[in-house]
Structures are given as C-alpha cells and as structure tokens.
Image: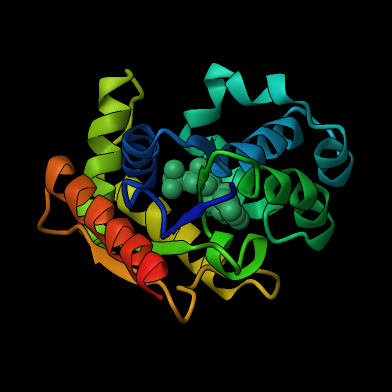
Length: 207
Ligand code: CDP
C-alpha cells in the first residue's frame, strides 16, 4: 500500500535529518529530492547544459560526495527555476512517492506539486538565523571554510529564489502541518513530526 509523507521547507530547515528519522521510524523508503537538483547544479558547474543534465540524470549521480557544498547548493537553486529541469525530474519523484510500502520525500514542492495526494504533509521551518547557524556548523564539521555571515546571506538568497520562482515555488500546501523547529532540538523535532503523522493516520482509520 502507498503512504506518502511529504516534508517540505526552506534551506537548512533540518528536513534531511528529520526525514531520515521519520522514514526509519515507519520503515518507509526515503528520497532527498534536493539531491536531484544538486546533481544537476553540479553538472552545470562542470559545463553541462542543465536541461540535458536533468534528462540524463542517473541514480548513481546522487551519491556524489561533492553535492553538499555551498557552491552546488546555489547552482541547484538556479537550475531549479528552469521548468524543463523540474519536468525532467517529475516522473521519478512521483513513482517514488507512490511506491508500495510507504515513502518519505523531502524537498520544496512535494506536498504542492509532486504528490498533492500525500497522506501526510509537514512543512518544516525555523528562523533564517537558526537555519544558517545549523548549516554553518555542518559545513565547519565537514571541513568547509566559511563564515556565519556568508552562510546566512546564502541561505536568504536561496530562500528568496526558491520562494519567488514561477514554477513550483516554495510554500506550504494548504493542508500541511507547520513545524517550526527554531526552539526544538533534533529529538524533539523528530518526535513532533512522528506525532503529526500518527495523528493523520489515526484520522484516516477513523474516517
Ligand atoms: O539541504 P538544503 O535544504 O539546503 O537544500 P536541498 O533540499 O538539498 O535543495 C537544494 C536546492 O534544490 C533548493 O534550494 C531548491 O532550489 C532546489 N529544490 C527544489 O527546487 N525542489 C525540491 N523538491 C528540492 C530542492
């Protein structure tokens, strides 16, 4: 049986950590859709035309270690405004969302465009400062040289581009549960997300 959990939100909101934990808890498969756009962004930085890169994308391209860099994040949000790039990545994401056994997808447009029929939709957010602080610490941890103000500026720039694009802009679905993690640690955020999904599952079995 298909059961889709859509987890959307702005840059560095903690969607990845949260989605993996929620997927583990329910025994569902997980897809970080940001990796698709990052892989296309990275190919663009290597000189490949982005629409061609999106059409030629293969599963193995998603496990490239270089996809987490700030340069690739910016390139990802640039290729993500191109409708043909988004269209090329649609079928794969839709099929993943409705696979048997349940799926968790995290991104920007999962609850609005990829899988509006998702049984559970969570929009994860936090203040720009908190998100930039978390991303800054993550980057320091993997040895990237940067400073907090740069990370904050890049986070805001990406949010602005993602939220104002014409095709599939970042926004919560009308029926999404909003989860603000500004004051929550990882454990509390995961518990809140699981509780939100459980409440929706109970509502479904009652109704
Ligand atoms: O991890 P972080 O939140 O920083 O970014 P990401 O989820 O890896 O996404 C990188 C970029 O891909 C975003 O800034 C978006 O422009 C784009 N993206 C998108 O347009 N739609 C998605 N479903 C996922 C990512």
